[in-house]
Length: 273
Image (cartoon, rainbow, N blue to C red; front, top):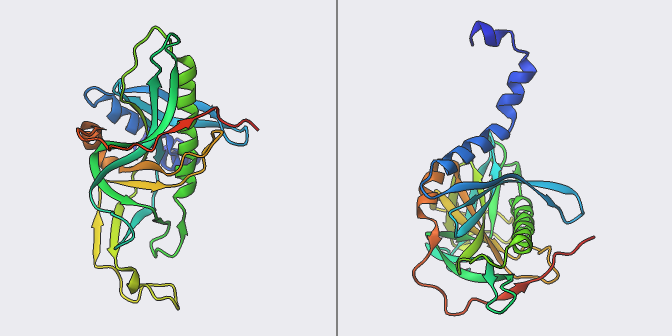
């Protein structure tokens, strides 16, 4: 520490070390330095499900895709995604269920929002369950669902705002997707195991998984509650390790082969309480 820093109160230095905002600015710097990408918005304000004021950390765009980004800085967290054998296909997938903006081809030229299944690169493993360890022992845990669910609501709010602000004289890309992304400095692991290795008596593994691997990103997918007037079914969220963000931005795009059936659901006006 320099003599100049020695004069700075420790609470100031502690706040700088503990705050998540410097991490957020570092993520924004990576986005701005990635070819074709820009920061569309920072600290995007939106109204939460309970009419409370919220802020979405970042929105990145390449003019076709919009990445709604929540930055999660941590000192001890480790994300472990479960891949039970036989539960569903959890290998390298390009399936992603998300919101899409579509320009209606009539005299209004308005935009409507739909929730659909898409093929999106990069491929990654897929998981419905995530264990977030918050201590070195791994015994203290929290749920990722709260963070992901709030990001889903923020994405809906931004998509709705995008729809309302769209100028009918403009031309919209047919692949205007809204992809929720959690960017974290936490290590990310996947654990593939046989469900029969979990004891029904203790609820714990009788034999720990042998296939545990680190991952740069994972698709987290489940039926989050929608803030809209109707439920939209399952939704996908990318969880990306920050060290792999630049590589992720270089790869993320719509896949060349798309699903024949998109299971489309119209996203209607968000509920106001």
